[in-house]
Length: 174
Image (tube, rainbow, N blue to C red; front, side, top):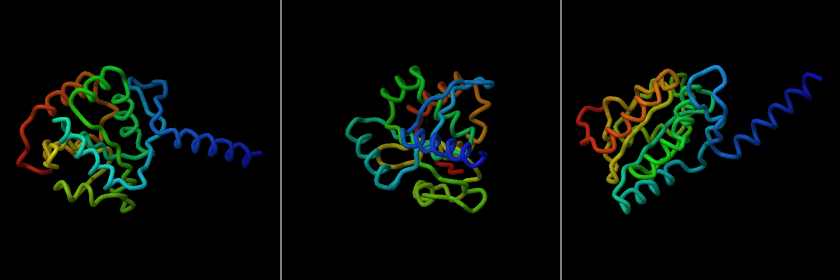
């Protein structure tokens, strides 16, 4: 009986995972939460494509490096799915999600992407990198500070993304 229930739950997770990011209800917390954080089969190529689209459109890349297991990653993804954030992202960014596993425990994935943009250490998830179309990191000092995304207010996240859409390239990399 327990195996059947667990198999059913696993099947449901696979179905949700295959659908990409799906917004769940807020439940007992104050943020929208994505139920699935879709891993990429070729994150490096997807980032390159996002940079090319950003160059063609004059926008920046919003690279979110997180994981399915992380409630802060799902919270940030949930905020980014809301209508208000979607309008901002459409106007200012090319958005890409990369599943990086659990880098703080040695089980990280696609960490070479972070190193490519000057971040050699990812202390947790999520990480939010804002890149120019040339691949320069705009928010080097704050890119790895999003591990508390679930406890941040939506307005504060929104205001930070507006600020980063216009901010000069950071010379300090975290």
